Image 1 (cartoon, rainbow, N blue to C red):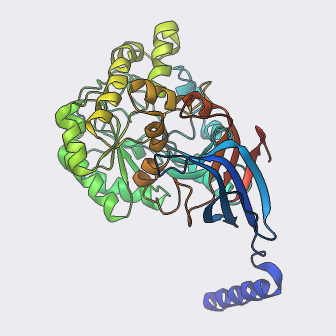
Image 2: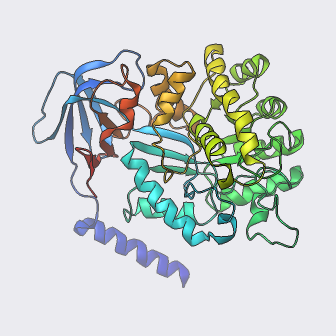
Image 3: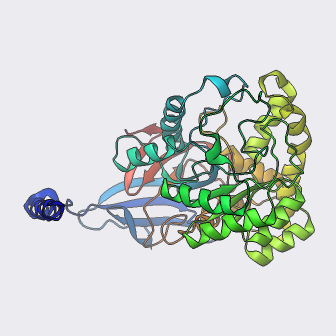
Length: 437
């Protein structure tokens, strides 16, 4: 009976396609770019035509050409770049770190925040985002809604809940009375290598497309120490090997040197924060092809809060932020000079009051050239995520994910904080500084 029903559905779908229910005819678009930073070459090009059919780039030609029947988008006075890629975000965050929120915010609140965040990512030019920590409901729901065109948002990779040990950075019970029960806490806890295997498999089953582990203490959590390695080598190795066997990359939140070095040796794909890395750590990163995602914007944001309004932060957080932030910024510059691959990440929920593109300026302040800062959010980020054939550059065959700004970001990197035009998959979502839907 079930087989007959499935066959009937297949026939109905085929008939619908034949009678006009299938895809519409191809749409051709050409963008006339005044200056093109393509995300691959260190040398910008001027007066370039980007040819697009449906959601993909079909060619990049010198000069302004107009193929017959193509819609022309005139960006001849703009600098055009690939859509930016954010490798460390929290889609469900509302940017409010006040302790009371731990008890008043629900999954419904997180989902509303995620919808708002998704739209703001596009507004600020981020067409791809790697979500490294959210609940198990809001992120998959928002991803489905974006795919169904119910809301506006970027391409999302999601880790669902970040995972670490009891008492570690991912343990929401930290700092609370044992009598308080936190719903959903267990999904974020790994205790033992066998548990790590099961939790990674469960995350993959539930929709995770990347895995995040927490082998060190953190700054924004209560009571734990960023210098402490909180996961064992066996736990890290089990989580990473299981994820890789399932085709998932793994990001490791790690501040302390021991956790950083051990996570690299266990095979992790990226170190998030990497605060207390040293020359030995950089050598290991280069040998193993491990990326560093410095997350300077969140460090600066928490530092400003800690100095000006420590009462808005949970206990112990302000002191940790004041100690850690200056080291994080210095570490990014040292890692860059050592030749470590760096990818862009802010660790900010997009509804905070900071423009995510401020990270570019912080990277330049740390010592990166403006072009290399742009590469962190284009080709480097695409390599880290694992789909450079689809995103991160303006080249034939890639998705038509394109942004444009007024002025020259190589002369003034803050120009990237004022995105005028955004196209995702061939669809214009922002033009003239205004969202189109």
